Image (tube, rainbow, N blue to C red; front, side):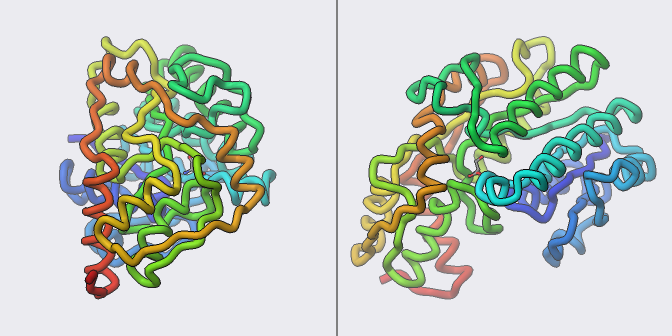
Length: 320
Ligand code: SER
């Protein structure tokens, strides 16, 4: 039986991944950890929860030691927009935090899942059909920490034999927990706005294509990769994974099929537009498909249907 520690368990990915892992491995075997944000009732009541600070190694080591943890899903991270506002904080949390997790993993013989992101690419990367192995010169602090994180994870694998694995997540869309301070947040906001106000003002321009993925696929990517046969992995940190390449007007058109009165206008945010322009339009995820059988289930149409159904229920609003 695995003993798993999840950092960032109160965040957008962590809040859902923790529950998936608890269902699969048993509630008591998945230790959720957060920093400041109050954990949800279900997260708190379904299994162990601890507050930690990844930048302080002892707070990471303590639950790992206490529960004899053998696998860490390290999801605590500062996203792109917040990182541009507070680059020093982002370096501290994203890099020192990861270094501490890897050191703890080395000392206590844990496996580590550490997500990278589309932000690990930059303006000099081929933006279409972005290859698995290509130029990575990001110009954001978030991207710098993600590339450095990929390298550090590979280093710990080669140098110390720590079983590290990761994926480059695209923009993640979910109805349960909101993202906090990313460039792709609009892809979640648009659904809430469509249901609550029937209109949305988008901060990215028409034609800004980015890779996106529905949360159930993102969770599957993490667990499938961690369960993959290591002998088949030629890459480790980190695999391109995508489910769809979408621009704002594509979301709007799909939403309109279910909410015909929905309208969208634009008020461009120059910071987020510049970040989005430096990221791929669509990544090539052939390596993930070949090495561990990656296959997304949701496309824009099925995701939109599910998002609208679930947010309407959550907000107790009828779609007519
Ligand atoms: N969703 C992230 C962001 O926008 C990208 O990894 O920052």
